[in-house]
Length: 273
Figure (cartoon, rainbow, N blue to C red):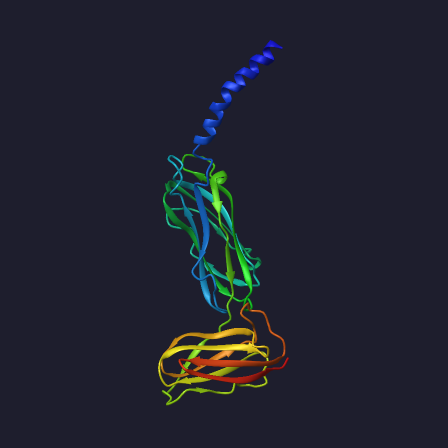
């Protein structure tokens, strides 16, 4: 009984010391950060873009502020993007990039740096081409199975990884045509009726802020094709029969309106599936 009481007293004396040690343990916070950073988080269909895996050791306390080695994987949705290639492991690291499963949406890479890497830096850059339909979203998932400092400390418990979401955009474009018109003009879309896309041409005699928007028969906005300042000239825009969220719209009558300064003109078109 006396031994039990003595043990409890000793535990009570040690508890504050243990708690203080936990509070001051330099490897308890998310001191190491890593994220896949795309050059464009909303790439257009058929657009080539890159994703760079970055690491930030800035907040990691010495002697664990130098990344010595790592093993990681990058995963993506093959319905959204297609793998093109990679830069290899960053300079200063010796490692291997395994892209044998790239067609299935996974890249494995590792590296080691005897001197360690400090501050913020990149590990690898991966090139993709967007192949998903308009509005299709995909997660680029970054995972580490091993990470250590040059002081041989395991960095996984203090690693914070943030994944990236990509959203594929439709290649709706404003194409300038030749000659400068003498007056405003909004032409009838062609083809009409149409499926799955149609072209709308318009003319501006002077530069101004321009909007070209599509509405359903109830007056609800379906999609904005143009909303930007344009110079004088002739232009064309393509609508792929999707709404603002990239979802396909149903068959029916739609209204498109061109607005520029005091000028406004409305025309109708028919989507027939």
